[in-house]
Structure formats: structure tokens, C-alpha cells
Length: 368
Image 1 (cartoon, rainbow, N blue to C red):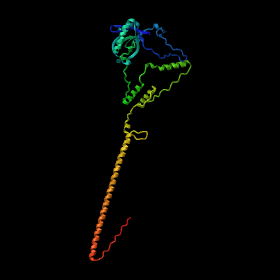
Image 2 (image 1 turned 30 degrees about the vertical axis):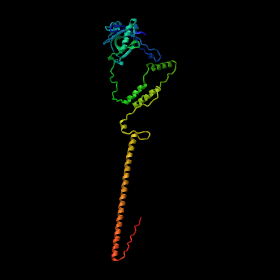
Image 3 (image 1 turned 120 degrees about the vertical axis):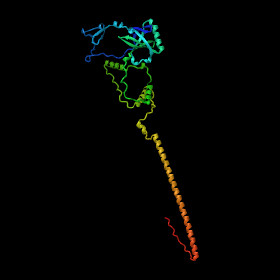
Image 4 (image 1 turned 180 degrees about the horizontal axis):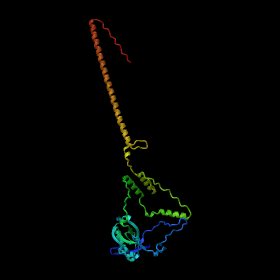
């Protein structure tokens, strides 16, 4: 790999000669600007506006434009002689835990290559010290005309450096979060956790740039004089009305994509205020358990009251019959005694007068 910067790491009084090489590369497809009528390339020419002629790269230097428009030339020698220690040195200023670094600050990544055999021992010393401390080194260095902040960490057997943005270069997330007050229920969090567990982890080596592959396919098709493959229909972007249903569907889809049998998520839906007041209805035509219990209890109470009422009425009727029978029997007994007494007195009178006693015939009552 070609180095883009040569210097040294300043580790206290230890100086480690190093070369800086890019740790990343871009695989994105680049396009050229063309004239749409004839396909001719559109090129930019570097022209001096004072002489109105095109100049070569060797004739081009740097200049700072002042507030009044004046251009102040700045040479590479001027920048190399800056009175700062980081002009040609990566200065380590502190060692901190890795979680102290906000990922928003991370910029370009580089590998630090030991500059020759004399740098092997101090290079290895710094690498092993970083490993054992579980910390990263915060550095300052100058590159491409400006001083930058950096972070050193161990990657395999090498030391990598991440360029960091200065803290004042990271914007605060003001006005980004939703303004509305939203309440997230525990059941929704449980489903989100289940979805996270179902998706699981991924090997980053298995991920690839599908967009780049699709562009390459279009280029190959047009180069062969064929029509590019039609794009699939975009997914529906309707509003999510039921967050719980969407989470459950996502969990099932994730399990199916992994070849697992989709299971119904064990989720108890919280009833709304309206449904909490009304007994739930079942689709099979049967009453709910609570309603059935209430109905059974009502019927049981009503049946008990009805049976008790019937028994009471029957008892009253029986008592009335007994009372009537007793009264009738008493009346008959009294009547017989009265008849016998009258008959005796009449016989006695007749005997005293010597007249025969005439029998009195009492007509029988017809029985209806």
C-alpha cells in the first residue's frame, strides 16, 4: 500500500517512525459527465483568469483569499515550517476508554506502518500497551493543511488511526426527536425485544453492496444491447395503524426468513377504555365466561326465589284447608248435639202431656 504521509508517533520521549496508509477504499461506481446529444466527454480545464490560458498541474499552488478578495500565496514549505509539533508528528496526548469516543466524531481510517527495522520494537511496545490497558490513544496530527484529532487502536497486529472531528464540528441533535409526547407500553417493548432476538447477529463479511451490483447489471445489459431487468414493485408505504400487529408480523417474517416455524407471539393485548367497560363478545355465538357466570347466578337466584315462593304458597293453602276442615267438623258436632238435645226435650214434653210425638221430617239437601 502506498503511504500518504510520513512522520513519527510521539509517545512521551519515545519516537516511533511510521508511514500513514489508507485503511479503506471505495468500490462505488463512478460516472463521467457526457454531452447527451453525441455522447462526448465533458471535461473541466484549469484556466488562469488573468492570462486566460490553460495551465498544468505543476503550475498550480495554494492561496488564501482574504476578506477583501486579495489572494495570499501559501507554499508547501510554509506549511512544513509551522511552529507546531504536529506538523510531522502524531502526538499522543491521552489514553482513554474506548466508550468515551462518540462514533459521530469518527472520520477517515488509516493504518500506521512501522518505518523500518528500528521502529519495530517501539511500535510493538505501543501496540501491546494499548491491548493490555483496553484503552485508546487520543492524538493530534496535521494532514492536508490542517491540524486534526485522532484515535489510535489495535486492529490485529497493527495500529490503526481514526481521524476524529473536533467536538465543535459535531452538531447537536436539536429539533430532530419527535415533539409529541409518546408512551411506549411494556408489551410493545417486549415485542421489539423479540424481534431483535429473532433477527439476531450477522457476519459483516456476508453483507454486500446490492446497489452497486444492480448498477453493474444495468451497465452490462446496455453494453450488450439488451433491456435492463425491470425493477420489482416498491413495498407499500402505508401508515402503520397498529404497532403491535406490525411488530408481530415482523417477528413472524424474520422467523420464516431463517427457516424457523412461526409461532404466535405470547402477547396479551391491553383493552382500551371503551372495551374495558363492555364485556367482550365471542365470535362463536357463546357468551363470555364472565357474562355466563352472571347469567347463571341470576337464574339460580331467580329459581331459588321461585321455589321458595311456591313452597310458601302451598303451605298456606294446606293450612287453610286444615282450618276449614276443623271448622266444618266442629260445626257438624255442634249441630248433632243441638239436634239430640231438642229431640230429648220434645220427647219429655210429649210424655208429660200424653200426646204422641210426631216425627219431624228434615228434607235432605241435594248434592249438586
